[in-house]
Image (cartoon, rainbow, N blue to C red; front, side, top):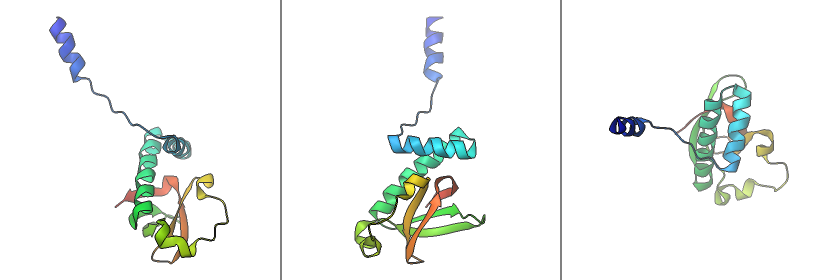
Length: 121
């Protein structure tokens, strides 16, 4: 009987996601907007991954535009690449639950709402 309990206990697995404070905030906002907690956590982790890639260089990602069309973008926030385009004024897009990036194709800053991110390539 005791061996059976140990065996059954070992078969139980749990999925755990460790989120930093900002990712947890993003997950909560996205979950509220989409009414889906799992979606909130997943997309918040995708945003964190994307932000890291944007800081390191040019990132390739897909999001849904306001008009419902898919937008495939190549962008960056790497200081060396965008320094000439930053004027230092304005409010962070994070305050509006958006992700800002310099669009390499359009040659200007753009942003998208966190919950519209589809894929980071």
